Amino acid sequence: MAEWQPRVTPETKAALSRLGPYNVPHGGMLTWANTRGFGCPWWPSGLTLIAHPKAADADYRRLLNAWRQVCKQQEEVRAVIRDAVRKKGKRAAVFAADVVASDGIVDDQIRGCHFVLTNAGVGQVKVENEVGLAWDEEDFVRIDLVTDDERLSWSFE
Image (tube, rainbow, N blue to C red; front, side, top):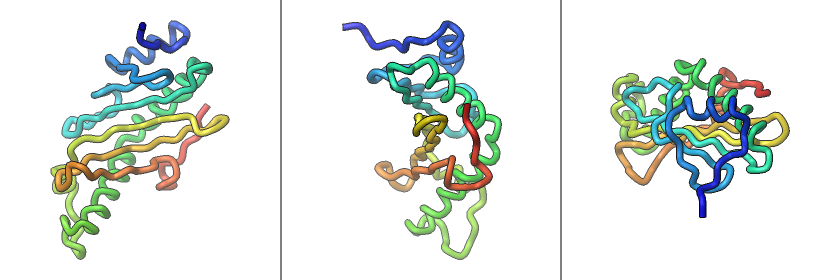
């Protein structure tokens, strides 16, 4: 059986391909192991876009727009990710409770991040980030980037 491929316009297909080679684990889901756009040379940053297979073109265009907005606000997104890792590390006693760990120390604890973008209703996109942690290979931090911090509230078309 052939692998499912999204039914999208040539323009949308080209935009998806510009992010790099992707896999199709199942209908509507596209994954990139290391995507272009979010500059984190010290973190492999993967991406998953989840669209309804029957509305793939419109959904992927909306998700690509959301990804562009995430990439435009890289510094703010990195700050939210680092803050979430600091909080998790203090709870796990990795960082001293009364000391703010520097960005470099936090970065040393991050073992990759993976963005997941999915449609969350009419005109809405859910943007999450899953961050792998050095102190526990089975643990990670899941961050809702749309609602977790007002600095990162976007509108999606």
